[in-house]
Amino acid sequence: MIIYGVNAVKECVKANKKNIKYIYFSRKKLGFEVRGIPVIRKDKSLLTKIAKTSEHQGVIAKLRSFNYTDLKTIIEGKAKPNLVYLDRVNDPHNLGAAIRVCECAGIDGLIIGEKFGAKITPAVFKTSAGAVCHLPVYLSANIGEDIEYLRRNGFALYSVENTENAISLSNFTLETDKNLFIFGSEGEGISRDILKKSTVITIPMKGKINSLNLSTSVSAFLFKALK
Image (cartoon, rainbow, N blue to C red):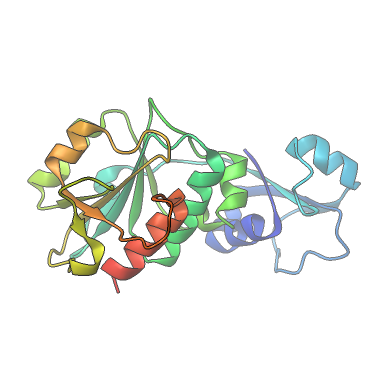
């Protein structure tokens, strides 16, 4: 996989530089340590051609691989794991921005669906500012089965959605040690089957419109709930 953007490449170097085959750059200097990685200066137009976008900021890197993480591996050995599931989020920029918030909030792992929603792409690396290099991501083939697995292992489910009987985030205090926080796409929201199985929390708003974009919702909820 080709990734691009200063922060995306920088964070992947910090996380696991052995996974980087080479770095191409057209900037005056990289601005971060790359010892042990082949670094080659190339023309900006070539970087644009390779990255298939002009938003590379003069830096691209070739990863040897990107591997999703097993769910059991994410929670193994953690006394108080907090996970996030993003339900049917189709925009890679929304996904990347949400990953950035999750990593900064100290979330232990992210779940996304294999059948529906965006996957990890170069655009996600860029928008996450490299946070995806540090946050384990699990690709679920059957989210229903995975949710039941987590429930059997003591996880509480919290869906963040604006429904009639939802609990206001202002009145919500997290009292469980193992948690799965669920957020839906801006268009479709969270599926009904998942809402039925979870405690629904709503973010109170005072403006004239009644919606927030995904990463803003994730940020507002996680930093309040996890304090």
